[in-house]
Amino acid sequence: MSLVDHAARVRLNAYVPYSRFKVGAAIRSTEGNLHLGCNVENVAYPEGTCAEAGAIAVMIAAGDSRIAEVAVIADSPSPVPPCGGCRQKLAEFAKGDVVVTLATTDGKMLRTTVADLLPGAFDASHMEGA
Ligand code: THU
Image (tube, rainbow, N blue to C red; front, side, top):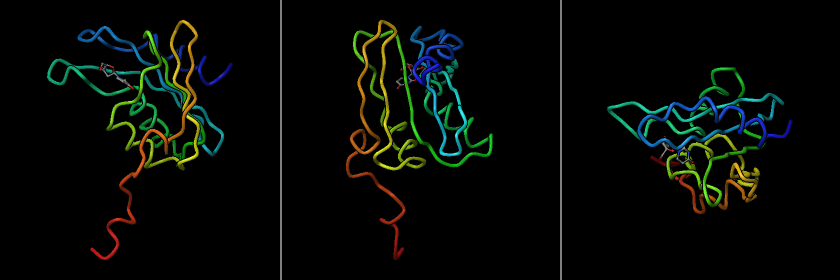
């Protein structure tokens, strides 16, 4: 199964009573393992936790450290771009050239990279000397 297929499968588990918009994310770690996340909303914060953030949390909890590849899928007219917060989270755990495949449930795909999603990213080097 491809990484997009894995993202499509976990997307079905999304808990989205407020937006009704299901998103699935799949990460292959540099350690070679698969980590899956879906969006999970709640009444106080209806935007909830994004699928990408969920997959990253699962990866870290599993003991892996870095992202080798990511896929994100939603039922959307065009591939949904990760939110700003998720771009920063992806940049924390992935090199700039890591491929992020954004997909729709009807088969559209956009291949991009972590650096293209977050040009000029803030990183630890900017705090040197603090
Ligand atoms: N969402 C994600 O999970 N990932 C994205 O890349 C975009 C947005 C979720 C958050 C919320 O549950 C719903 O989509 C609508 O914003």
